[in-house]
Amino acid sequence: MTGPAPIELLVVSADPRTSLLLAEAFSLDGFAVSRAHCAEHARVMACGRRPALAILGDLGSARGALDLLCEIRASGATGAWDPGLATIVLGCTPGGVDALRAFEAGADDFFSLSAGLLELGARVRALLRRAALRRAPRLIEVGQLSIDVAARSCSVAGIPLLLRRMEFALLLHLARDPDRVFTRGELLAAVWGYRAAGATRTVDSHASRLRRRLGAGAWVVGVRNVGYRLR
Image 1: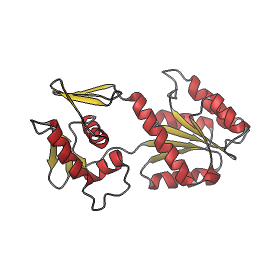
Image 2: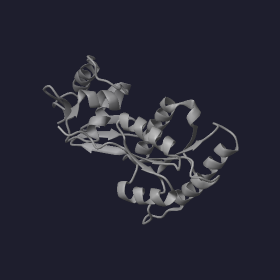
Image 3: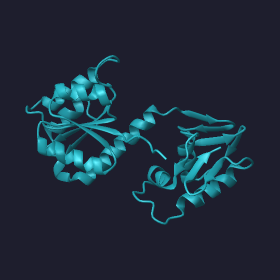
Image 4: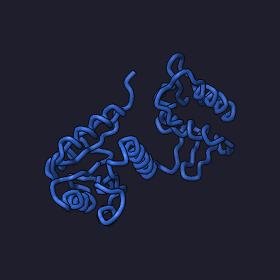
């Protein structure tokens, strides 16, 4: 079964060592990574791949990354860039003038590589989650099931349901793509943040409780040896 397409990241840096280091690290983490060595190259890559997030590094001048960031934020609907593109600017030190200038230019985050790739990866994933929440619809309806994402509430045929936090998170993830069968590994990664499925019964136990809470009608359907989907 074909899984979801990997999330596109764009690394922009005139330093080939930094660019390659980031590309290799994020590729191993499951992302699709494009590399650009200058602003013009980055525009071409952005038009072709439409990244979900851009990491802006050293572009050979003091304002190189900031000028590109300003260009991204000023881009119109028909421009090369999505003006709402999530961005992280790389700098030498975690604070000070460089960080202030980056945030003033519209950066979502500022990061010093001296803090390590693990922390950078965590920041990337946090930014992508926030971006996804901004794009997500407030109300999701699947048949008689209605989920208010912002209020974190749901109902079936107008009857409110009381769900625990992870039960709601599991239901919401299934409802966002109700025609798709999610594997246990995909659900563990998306809902619980696990990197490896292992031998845990977490998904099965939560799916069983969720099925009971939803009541009549097999809303949460188990697919043998694969995972779960919504009816």
